[in-house]
Structure formats: structure tokens, C-alpha cells
Image 1: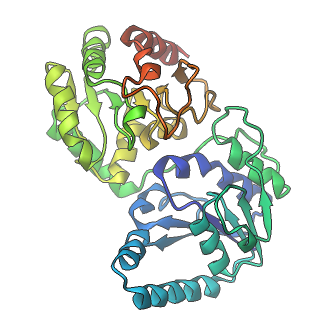
Image 2: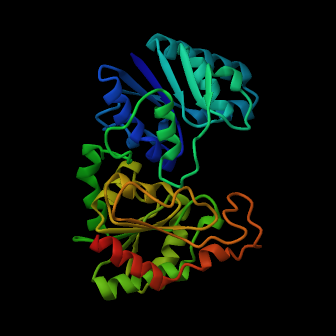
Length: 344
């Protein structure tokens, strides 16, 4: 049996969809599993023992061709991609995103059976079967658990994320830390994501780093993307040396290794924070405008979330930039939660 999983982005969603792999391999032990992934995210799964093949998709290139009006070139690329997928002769495509483009990719795959999530997006006719995302029980990865159950598979173990750091990244990440004079244990701080309403406040991150230095005798390492480097520098400067900024200075694989090596992690709703569950790192997650889950399948992962009348607002905040839901999370509350996950 040849199975295609279509969950090409983003980092956090790929992490949360990863538990499907063990269930599929248990239910279909001889299956060949391919994961369709944006080329920039290959490090996430290239060392995973249950992924037989990664099918890379250059979404950025397709979008550039569309925006520049190079429709002939785009059409040719789509046909080439379709031919490549048809060569694999997929039996089953699991469209685990619920978007028009992911449904189109499932249809292009030529899979005999195409099962996908329902949503308001068009393209449902491209699926052979449409399923809901299941009950909203606020457990991590619940929609993906619902999907595997709908195809008749029952998990025999905890449905928790699982990742493997590529060997070459394990060999290089420590050098990145040593360059910043971090040679022993450290706290990992992940303050950054794509939407400001999901952020905590820079001064509180700095205060938190100082607390960890004073109470735990641990330096804090700041992680994020290239666009977060300036904000990371500001937090590091305000922390009086308690925080070291590595935002935008690692590959994705090296970032995975840094998560795996952390003694403790604190982060907002971002992909690196979700990795805490995959690597069994004691983690404190700060949620406000979004609340993808309140419970994980691990004992050392705590979610801090103060629900307001307006929350979760997701992409439509109504607070005029005050972000009261995140403001309610205090530094001492995070320290208390950190002690809890470290003792668990």
C-alpha cells in the first residue's frame, strides 16, 4: 500500500500531524508512506524512521509564477509535478490541511482514495471522502487522531508528536551555542511567531531570562526566524546578558536540535514550542489570541491561557493592540509553571 500525507506547512502543524505516522505504520506495517512537504521544511521529517519518502513542493516558486503572470510555466510545472506523483501510484492520500491548494495536490496525486478535512474552502469535489475535524476536546493533535480513526485505525500508544533530529544537525548545533558561550544546560525561549496578537511582551521575556539566571543559574537562548533577529537583540540587551539571541542564525534542523537539548522551554503558539512535546522537553506554552490545545500527551507540558470574552480571537483581534489575554500572563506565573514541569 502506498500512502501520501499532504500537510505541507507550517512547522507547528507538521509537528502536530506527526503522530499519524506511527498509527499508519502499525495499521499498515508494509505500507510505503510519503509526506508532501514544502521544500523549506524538509529537515522536520528527513530523519524520521516512519517516513519512507519526502515529496518536496516548491510552493514559493508556484506563487511567484502566478503573481508574475507566467501561467504557461506554472501549468508546465503542475503537469510535471502531477506526472511525478502519478508515478508513485498512491492508493490513499490523506489531505490533512483542509485548503483548496492541498485538495488540488491530493487530486493531482492520482490516489484512488482521497480523504480530507471539511472546511469553508472550495474544492470538496476533489476528495473522494470528506471528514470533520472531530470533537473540540482541546487535546493536542486531536484532528489528526480523528482522521486516523475515520480510516479505521486505533492508536495502540499515546498519540503524541514524534520527531528525529537529522544526524548532521546534531553534530553542528552545539557549535552554534558554543559560539555564544553557552556550553552547558540552558533554557530555550521562543517569543516569536507570525502574528503580533500571539506574542508576549519583550520586557517580560527579559525579566523572565533574568529570573532564570538568578533562580536556576541557567542562561536563556532566544530562538526565532531571520525577521526576529532585531527583536531578539532588544530582549537580550534588556536582559543584561541573561539571554543570548540566536534568532535567524540556525537552520531548521539545528533549531530542532536546540529544542531537543534544552533543559526547559518557554514559548508562544509557534512551531518550536510544539516541538517540546515531540522531544519530551519540559515546556511552558503561553497562549492567548489562539488556543490550539490545552492538554498534550505528555506530563511535563503546561499551557498558560486566560480566556476572555473576546478570546480566542485568532486572526481578528478587537483589543486595539493591547492584547489583554497575553498581558494577563505574569512572569511569576511562568516561573511557577516552569518549576511544575521541571518537577514532574
